Image (tube, rainbow, N blue to C red; front, side, top):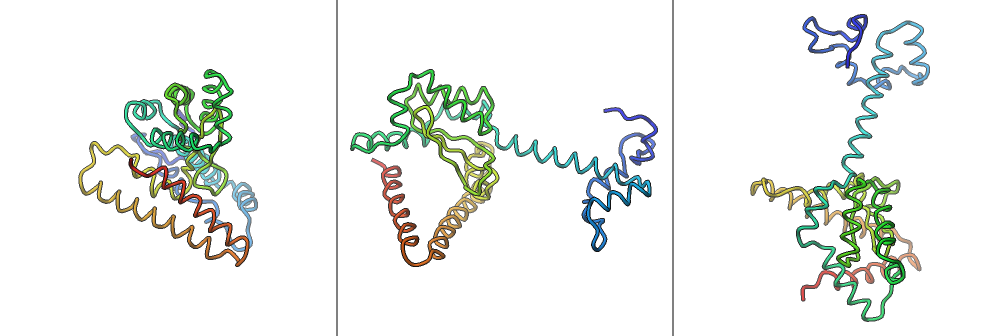
Length: 262
């Protein structure tokens, strides 16, 4: 991007045009750090503007850039790439085992909301509905189509997508197109402690890196269990505490069926 020479003094551009000292320094400044006692951001901007302080446009520009960079980083992190989708397609994964456990429960007479969709909707409609959810969650259009087609054609019950959820939940669950779609909240600390650590490519990782990842993943899992334990501990005696315990029992029974190795 080219700027007119008149802005060189404002940006603090060096003679060799390789850096802009003023901008790089003020890019690290938060406008709130300039506030005096009782002063608001609006009044601070007004004061700087009235005094024709050259820092104002630079600070505002830096803040605007930081905001956009943060947004871009979140979108990139939430996006399911086509390469990742193909990689999951080429290798065995948890969705297959989860589907096997679900088929067993279906044969035993258990039925979920997604099962009705699976029976009544034609394959093309199922693919479209699944792809729509994946795209809304943050997947690219191409990746969403690949995952949706794979889910339907391979008769899978589950698929995952990375997303920025507006709730404090670690993940979201939607039944669409006969599938159960799990949106993993990349903004939740549990994602960094577990999913991201274990999904990173391990081909180039040495033993020390792998050991560190496993230790962090173990810590993340233990902290999740502690969080649930504290949640139960804070429930008042009576129906709420009983329901929390029963939910843990029911989930434990379901988890046993999904995790057992036959």
